[in-house]
Image 1 (cartoon, rainbow, N blue to C red):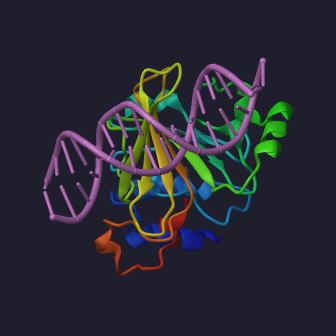
Image 2 (cartoon, rainbow, N blue to C red; image 1 turned 90 degrees about the horizontal axis):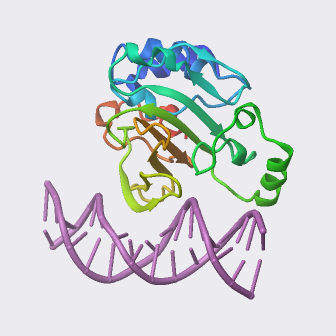
Length: 216
DNA sequence: CGTTTTTGACCTGCGC
DNA sequence: GCGCAGGTCAAAAACG
């Protein structure tokens, strides 16, 4: 994907807050490497007060947002983002779950985990998750979700909520929970890709083929 | 009254 | 095989 087409997507009004576009284009979508055929999806881009800042790319599958800047901004903060694809089931990079995420998990998948991944590798929708600092659990990502379950995860005091996209024939799911170590953090995990545009983005209807909407 | 949320039951995968 | 934990279902309740 060329930078010009990416820029054009930004110009198509995907970012609801004007000041968002430069910040996101500077880091988020457009610095993602590995010849990704898609930019990162809009959940954080859509959120009104999300303000990503400088990045580091330890390996090319994760992007981190320096928490040292968190206090500079009010509202939710995007702190980290993980990604997996259907070809590579990044179980070892899973953001959620009761297990602690160690350094090893950030740097890669250990041999043990690779074994598990191989064993559990099945048809699986691409997933990614990200952390935000937010008072609200469910960020407005432009899609309409229906809650279908809630579960208390072991060793955490906050329940995990399960949502499905309400659009017909759309099997995209997301899970939302608060970080046990820091309840100010909300972890959102998306699974699957939308086969449609965000439902409440009616003012964008003159841009019916904005692919960015479908990338997660 | 249609839609969404709640919540206990049920299902499934994994480790032992 | 058993128990545990995470994920999903579905009936009832709540909501607009």
